[in-house]
Amino acid sequence: MRLLLIEDEIRLAEYLRKGLAEEGYTVDVAHDGIDGLHLATQLDYDLLILDGMLPGIDGFAVLAALRQSRSTPVLMLTARTAVEDRVRGLQGGADDYLLKPFAFSELVARIQVLMRRRGTAQSSPEPTVLKIADLEVDLIRRKAIRAGTRLELTAKEFNLLALLLRRHGEVLSRTELASQVWDMNFDSETNVVEVAVRRLRMKVDQPFESPLIHTIRGMGYVLEDRSTS
Image (cartoon, rainbow, N blue to C red; front, top):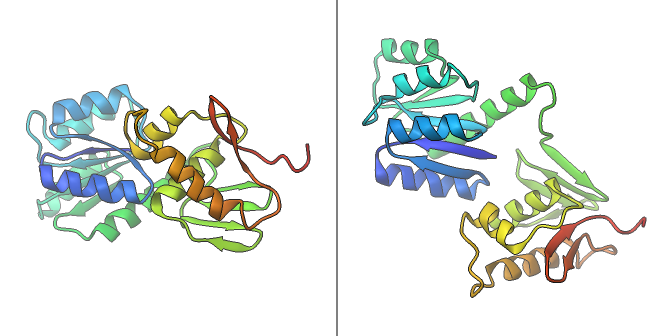
């Protein structure tokens, strides 16, 4: 799931970006209203986290402009405690409102609630539980189970498995995996993808009869069930 964070406090933005990435989200960051509005209207995001007080265009103006063309869920952050400000944000189209300072765990919980609402409202929502063969991955609870056994995965391993499972049957290159999971341009000198796939295989495939993660030489990796072919 891809989020856009529009926050002018550099340290807070970086803290949130790292934390949300560890929770499995891909996060783009803008530090002012102008850049934020441009990204929000030009790219597709699952949710926006929008600070109310921004340079260039403030959060309320960004929200008003966004709502002219987009229905992307918006969670507003603000240090303003006045009820009038919260009402203004909600009436302007925000889906939720969180006062600063806030606990990171509460932010994540509110994001999850908005994602569930969005899934319910969409006619064809993205499933939150993905399955293939005897492997099941719960994207909301961040839990992976194979043949009834809980798989203990790191955050990156979970994100890698979720991506492979979402696009099962499709060969994904190392470049795409590096971009989607590590938010980095692929460097041929690094073996981060190979190492991560090897470790993931040890947990997902080695204890079980039929491997699901396969290497396609010269192309990348694919997750698919070959036990019935």
